[in-house]
Image 1 (cartoon, rainbow, N blue to C red):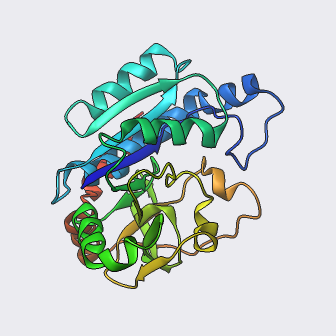
Image 2: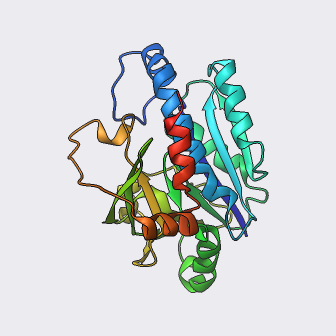
Length: 268
């Protein structure tokens, strides 16, 4: 079964942000600010991409969507970071309505729309477990009776970590929260144009069955200065530095290397 993922890298969508901008020019200026993009690149390099490269099931595609106005030096850096991961395809789009463009990209990526597919979304500052694709595919096999009766079925691994990354390393806390996008996938029936981007992730249960898994811990949700979702009504989250055992677990489970984090974030 085809597995398709989508990752937005500072794409200046019309809509789709909790941070308001009066014009698309203001949004582009915000997203492509040098300091913000430097942080996003460091997070992508040390958090979002290693788990993609380390997947135990390599049969999937991840489409990275960015804006067609991304400055060339940033565009080149993005291509260089992704060059060693054959599953990644980078797509540049002009500013368009958020859901419209993401739905079109995902549906165009389906090799045979008459066949079912699995879809997932991936934020550029999050990680999921190295066996996420393997478990997503297994969940679809195990629920064939359910998926055959519905246009779409959501699979939700709801336990993981919140983490902050910096020159000092990694600070975390455990988290259990349903319908986080960081380790969530969707089975979509053949001849159905629904995509995982049709819905706000926290509202998916209103539209389809959700199969939840309480273990194992499957995601790392990044907290950082440019989190769109934390700009409004953000509450402080107490975090503790990873100890040696925690750092070993992060390497094994999420392919996040604390030494790489310290090196990349410690650079000028």
